[in-house]
Amino acid sequence: MWLSVQLVLWVIWVRMSATSELRSHKITNVSDVIQSVPGRTKRSVFSTQVQQDILDLHNRMRRMEGSSDMNVLTWNTELTVMAEEWAERCYWGHGQPSRTNPPFKHIGQNLYAYTGHFDPLNGLHAFYDEKPFYDYDTGACSKYPCGHYTQVVWADTKEVGCAYSNCPNLDNTNLGAASYLVCNYGPAGNWGGQKPYLQGEACSECSSGVGWCENGLCSDTCKKETSKCECRQKCHNCGTVILSNCTCSCAEGWLGVDCSVPCENTHKFCGAEPGWPEFWCNKDFVREKCPLMCGICKESTTICSSSPIQKSSSIATAAISGIILAILLH
Ligand SMILES: *[C@@H]1O[C@H](CO)[C@@H](O)[C@H](O)[C@H]1NC(C)=O
Ligand SMILES: *[C@@H]1O[C@H](CO)[C@@H](O)[C@H](O)[C@H]1NC(C)=O
Image (cartoon, rainbow, N blue to C red; front, side, top):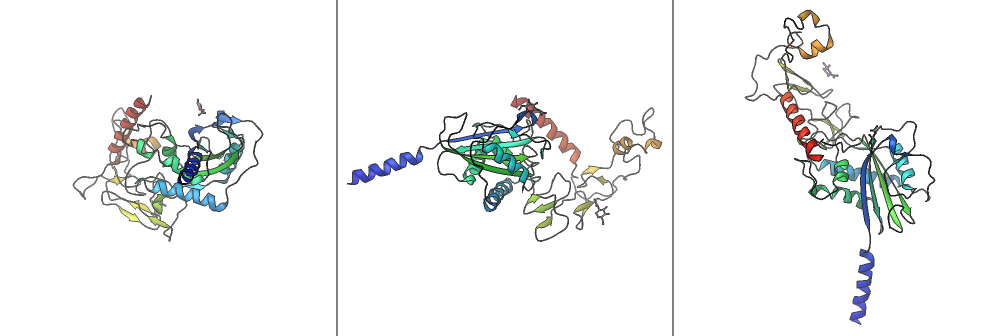
């Protein structure tokens, strides 16, 4: 009696665990376009609620990274329809259906296939579970792949669209009946030699240059303080935040969106002879390189902290480590 119960349980366990999982990721572009290949399944569309759940989970994962420039993701219907058209072909491989005006020039794509009970959020967890194998400092991946995770938390990516198909069999694999999840990301992440995001205080280094923050993620749609939108702009070197538009008013001697650029001539030709005389200050490149000579700003006369924060030097360091990283990756 007990033996047979155990046997049944064992059989159930074996059957339940005999599932297969596949993942793949890539930056897709025009050369990946496949002309009208007919779909093999009836198109499956996530309900609005499931789309919201997928979007929310993406943003929750992005929030957990401790990043200073992470954009909030929004749902993109066109990326979703492209994912639907791709998934319904039941072909395991990257690509996009043909479009005359694709929503992004480069679209990141994460694929996931599973032969057991399908929950799209499990697919997303499978992507994010690569995180422990990714070394933020070196960009190394100790257990390949890490690219699904880095696409999910790529700071510059702003929009996502996911869809799925129930495939009777998945071409280009030996899987039988499988659920096939396709997620498209724009703009694409995973550019070689780049870090997925900057580490730091939430919304303190948004790519927009302005610190509008939606629940800890950089937002382009925020225009004023509301229950959803918070200004997290940081202004260095005695600069103050103008709350009405979330920008910095810099103290004398400092420039840049966060007042971290010192007012100084940065080119050896500024005011030199031969070089760029002061009356050339009507030229944009001279104004940009010689702000002090052109009177755009004045030298700082006050000291507001023992160690002024200068962005230019830290950018230079980041660029150098980026080059080292690129060499390591090749
Ligand atoms: C498109 O991607 C392929 C490889 O996937 C690459 O060789 C090619 O340079 C890319 N084209 C553009 C325009 O980025
Ligand atoms: C922000 O507001 C201040 C004060 O009203 C104004 O001087 C400044 O030009 C504005 N900045 C931008 C980028 O709109």
